[in-house]
Image (cartoon, rainbow, N blue to C red; front, side, top):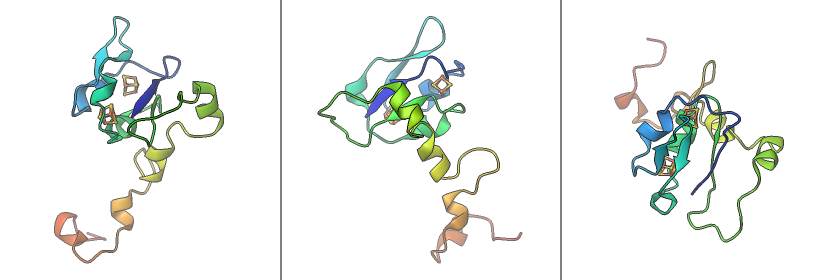
Length: 114
Ligand code: SF4
Ligand code: SF4
């Protein structure tokens, strides 16, 4: 479930507001998104991967029982932006799709080396 929007990192690009499939965010008066409907979050991570500055944290639990970690804990632990990095989103990274060797992958991606 979405837990944190870092006002310190956010550049108010509005990407997360636009891509969230369940309309969880509202655009704040200062352009920084507000988590307005947290219960509607589907823990899909789409907002996290679209955020260009790693300002969002989606907890892996749909219904967390504990308070979320602080922004400092997340940043110090290298958690902010880690999912985006793992799946290869971002300039100069290798996407998981490029590494996928399952036989059917060539049906949906251009042939490698072409
Ligand atoms: S994890 Fe998915 S559903 Fe939840 S806020 Fe982000 S984009 Fe929306
Ligand atoms: S995608 Fe990231 S930088 Fe853009 S508005 Fe959302 S939190 Fe801010």
